[in-house]
Amino acid sequence: MALLSPRFALIVDAATMQINSNKTRALALLLALALLLLRINRCAAQDDNMVAYRHEFYREDNHRIEVATESIGFDIGLLSKLRLTGDVVIDAISGATPLGAPPQKQWPFPTYSSFYSKAYKPVYNVEFNNYIAQNLIYVQAGYETPLQLTNAASAFARSASIPIAARNATASYSALTNNPSFGSSSVPLTQMHDHRTAFNLGLPIAWSENAFTPSIAYSEESDYVSWSGSASLLRYFNQKNTTVTAGWAHNADSVRDDKFIWEPKLTDDIFVGLVQLITPRSYLTVNASLSFERGYLSDPYRGVMAADIPQLNPSDPALFPENRPRHRASQLVYVGWTQYITPASASIEASYRFFHDTYNVNAHTFEVGWHQKIGSRLVISPAFRVYEQSQASFYYILVPDIGGFPSYYSSDYRLSEFLSVAGGVTLSWRLHEHVSLDVSCMRYVMEGLDGKTSQSAYPSADVLSAGLRLWF
Image (tube, rainbow, N blue to C red; front, side, top):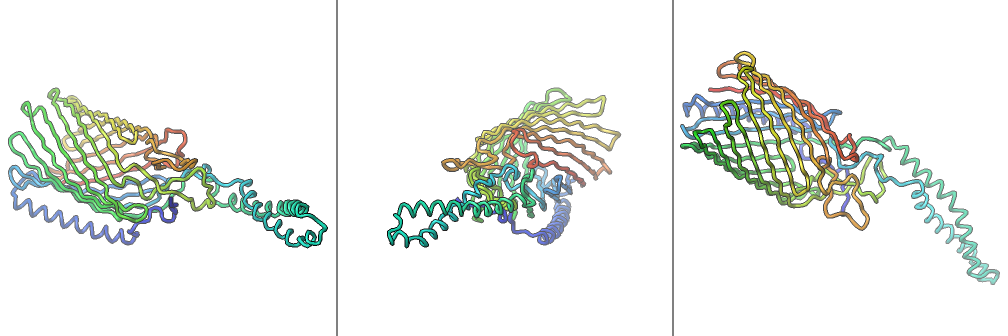
């Protein structure tokens, strides 16, 4: 089993200058796409088409991860029953992220006694052998027996080795404990940079009480390439008071593993949904999905630390690449309620989502949002979300090494037991009949619940976004 050097961790192909260059070309691509969509619209002669631009900025506290995202979305009528929808996304990620190692105060560093024991044995052997070589003449002359010589050599080696071993152990232990990084209470981080380009295209086809939407998507990073296709069927019942949706999606991904070998990762999702009008001012939404993943599912840039392998360099943790199961199945159920409040010119949305997978992770999400209309053009929408999950069955702070490693292991804090809370507000302003602007800000906070994982592993972040939509 090979050790993962932290100098290798989170190595990506894109340097910062290359990211900036790619981003400039990407923005030019987005502009060209917008102009193309305008030409498509003129040919289609539709008046209910939309093009949207959005910029989003995600920034974690303490100079950790930052993500800047630019995107263009569109919904264009091609024929009376045929539309083209999709988006193009360009984003850049940079900053510091945990390696998987715990804070140094939890590392299995050698003790003074272990340094002393390691230094004593070789010194003792040298002194013992030197004494034998220098005094063997007395045995050969008959003045001593071999046993007498051995006992004398042992006593001499012990007395000579003790001060030498003590000096060597003191020097080694002092070098360890005097390291500026020794005893840190924060998880070690490493810097990363990467760039992602993605697009998604859908072709909704409507007829009678039905709508069928095939779609295709692509995403590329330096170490991850994804192709996906999906198809969904929507049908209205009960004079459109009931809507049923069913669909399937397939992802065929390629992931570069910790040995820089590209490996496959395949995902299939099956989903069904129901939207039921309950009263003229309220409706119920129920969704359920099954997901099946197979192939390389580990994170190639996160390692684990073994409890029985001493760490010798506080600035350079020795880690093993994590090893997750190569199969994963998950189930998700979502229930939402939307209520319009006519006297207040507002609506409220509340939802609950339950998630379970074969990692033994159970997750619960509660979310509530309020949409308040002010005047004829402005809507203010505060929202609040709480997420809680249990830890995966193979999550470890330090992986035990007694009798060998377990079959699967990871120290990724995202597989631990934790709670996250997010709250924010969105302002939507209809500037003109054909133009709208929305701005939002959100605060996101994570907190560990297992009492073992360092709180320094969990990020807190601000998310800011602004978008512009054009109808034509």
